[in-house]
Image 1 (cartoon, rainbow, N blue to C red):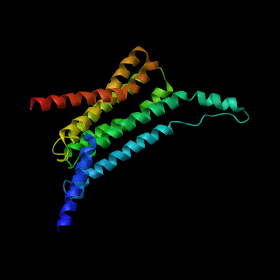
Image 2 (cartoon, helix red, strand yellow; image 1 turned 60 degrees about the vertical axis):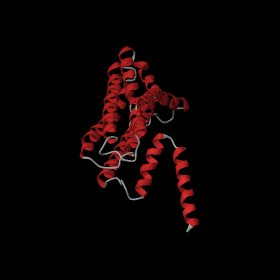
Image 3 (tube, one colour; image 1 turned 45 degrees about the vertical axis):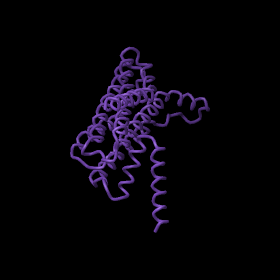
Length: 249
């Protein structure tokens, strides 16, 4: 009996050490997963269906991006240089594909991260989630339009504007998913704030890209390379707010 009690205490100490070694987001997800294994705070079936449906839309949108990459037409009998030239002319299409692939991946990552913290279903999730997915599904068109007329102001501005709209819809959805009654009770405030802050990365980079597209559309998409920078700045701001709250309390 004493050995079992000592073994239980040792296991508890190991779990506590593992919890301390995880980052804030990992701690929130780890705690929620542990509670699920115990049978508590289990996500509703309706919530799981919503997540599966969302993942399917993201996957289809990414797949539609590559459908726009049609093999170049080269007449038979031409030399290798003809194929190289044909591929060279497709650079705008390749550029549009890779940019949009990673942008959609960033949106999916934020959606996944936010819904990993959920524990309960709410009807409030349906319309915001569908609105965000509608904007995601529209992206293959704006990508193809921009790639076809790379460097033109209107297609590039439309593409960046669609990213801004998607980003704002995504921020709204993440806020609902990380607020009561949807968010799991085991998730701490630090994890919630850091998860929300990461959603600003694509949105702010898209705002910068849209502004540049009105000046010189040829270079506006370079602004999307600042997505990681905006994420870091937003996370730093969230940590400063948390520190200020701890001091004031």
